[in-house]
Image (cartoon, rainbow, N blue to C red):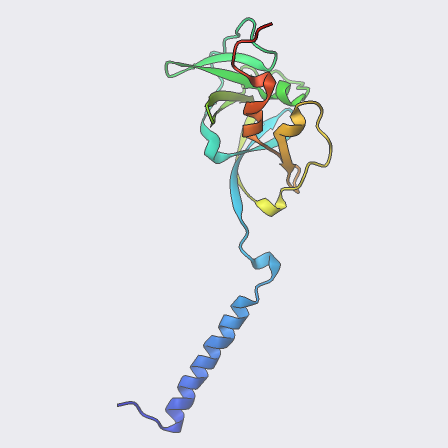
Length: 183
């Protein structure tokens, strides 16, 4: 049997009122508090620049070992590496992006193995800095126009000057085509 005296009813009413006020406060979140859509990226360096690669396309990261050049390969290709019995073409990201590199990192670099559509290739970078979660709203159009084909590959830039690479655009770049040319 429920008591209906004044103290009991006012106590329940007070709790209900407190809960309503808390709900209203939570509903009034500021823009900064609204949960943003975040994407995880691997941050790599190519020369003095930092680049972000979306994690879903990344298969693994390896230290560069046993790079073999391939005669007649396009200028953006460093060569191939043997990855557990499978030959993997390695793309030199400095050449693709048109970045002058002062130090030779062909022996100390890292190979980021990516899979984009039908392409499975390695990206030669100087170093891998780690994983960073970036709010999609923070990625803005690039401040400067990248030269040539690299313009389409760089999809945006973060507030801390990390360029976001579009790996689908990279795979579609004619310089990266793995098909035999008719030249």
